[in-house]
Length: 163
Ligand code: FES
Ligand code: FES
Picture 1 (cartoon, protein in one colour):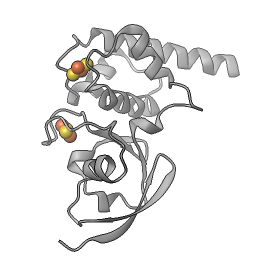
Picture 2: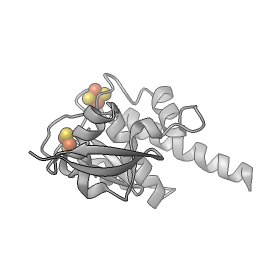
Picture 3: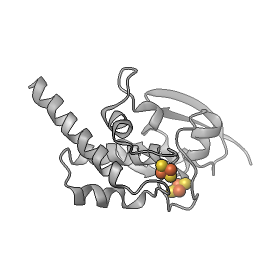
């Protein structure tokens, strides 16, 4: 298939790429850009392992054509750390044992980032609803909820300290 040139902005950097028009964003991220943090779990929009942010909103990269993301701000798990340090939510995951094998973790973290952008103080129900499309085969989910609660508390404490 004839390739086409596109520009993708990923984690703040613009990349010029020659890709097939039907290339999926997940494949372009992993294969062409070497950003393997986004995982392929089911490949049929059912597990959330491939979740990335498009303009801050969680979306499934296995269900998006890369070409349709031209001009959008794409963020992957590789772009989540803050000034070279783990983001608050990443640290909380580590502290609370939110990850076991870790395969699903990037997708969960991107979904949580999207949730917290929309709703900085989510209830347990809000978190449950937001994460309903992300699957984990290892944890019982409780550690994840605790990690998210801890991250929300840490973010709020940080905001209060700055004000
Ligand atoms: S790989 Fe995209 S939802 Fe499972
Ligand atoms: S930590 Fe292993 S699949 Fe979620």
